[in-house]
Length: 594
Image 1: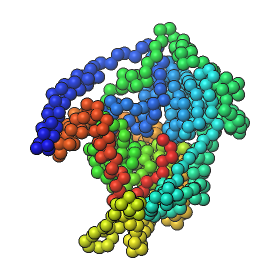
Image 2 (image 1 turned 45 degrees about the vertical axis):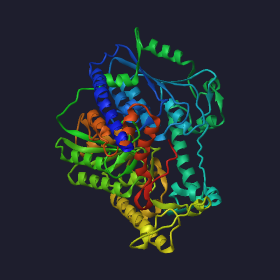
Image 3 (image 1 turned 180 degrees about the vertical axis):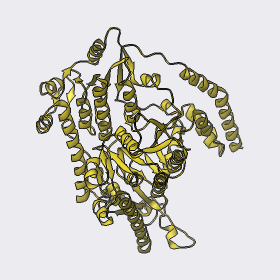
């Protein structure tokens, strides 16, 4: 009887949402589809980077309702339009107070410089403080790429270097009887090191300091170029901090000191009489060009987040979180292959990896596109590591930012054995199995038996060997050379280019130019997105089509009504797939940069 009432309640709430919610959504969508307000004749765009950045705009059509920041891709595309718009006179950027993903800063720096050089327009940057959180020197580098870099009076300039901190659980596990049973291929595949050790291993320390040093040197070299300073002198001055904003100005690290209102007034005055501040996102919505549906095109396919099998269909339609679903990406490639107007493909990858089988499905789609005579150029974002490199490895060309984290050619897998820990609380785990003994290898009570360990180790070896072979084939390198530079080690884009793992250093539009060259296209070529996102109606229908159980219906309905407990249920359902890699194997890199 209780289940019956739950079902009735779930159906009632679902119907209520359709009767009340859908008309409301239609009104909102109709209002959004109305003709946008014109852009003022003298406009200063205000771009706020303090809300965080994803690499790519979410494919989810309702993600905007869930909050979150902009995407790197949407910003650089909008800047390309703004630099040609006579009404846009300048851009004012509000910088974050902490660090930002170095490769994202690299990409935005290129966009800022293109806007200034091609559009002959200024970009002003304002900071209310730079604090030692994350890769703050990359934030400083981006500010240095502006026409004028301002800071709020008496704010703190603490961009004196970069640091990283790891938490190790080995002694905690030993104390409470938890056994971390993991295999790594090989010593640099350190994503699970915090479970296995109480400190950095020599390889872990070496790899981390290596990529951090590369990122830091890139930021300092770029900032020195843009500030017209000697790199060594700039680095020495910066490392002697921290400073107040006034001291930073006196040391030539920034240009001016002033409140936000001061730089806004300054930018408006320079823009001309009657100039107006316009929010960057509002301008992006107002300035979208008409869609061109004919003529040669370059397809753009995106992949951001952890790589998983299947198609996007779980979780909340209001969430901006993203995964790379192998079925969706494969379908996007098929659509591009079948489209006679598409002459080449730019594959934008920002992923630390995930499932090896999902990665292989996507890589097979890359091969299919090449076989169909459509060159594939990978443009790497913040990460293109482990599985992210797997799906990139056989493209015709790979373009990475100097600070992209890539490589991590390796695999790890295993489990936690918690039988001893549970026994201390009176909980006993007793396995049963039918068939081969390996069927209980991933039981949570006991560790691997010697036979199970040997079989699992052999499986890890096969995945690793397959990964190495794919890289060797795609990069035209001897397998023994790939093994030397693999071992799970993360490289920056700059390091990877020296090793032959990427072809060029640059951003998204450099990848577009490369795709045009490979396809022998000239002049302007339209970019055609092949992300395969669902329409708002399809997403909403699928979200509410949860009749499998009344509990799921209630949880889905409650999401829209704002119940945080039900939101948590759906989020955990979506995330569970990432944690439950079949057999415990994963081609996933550590993600120290957020």
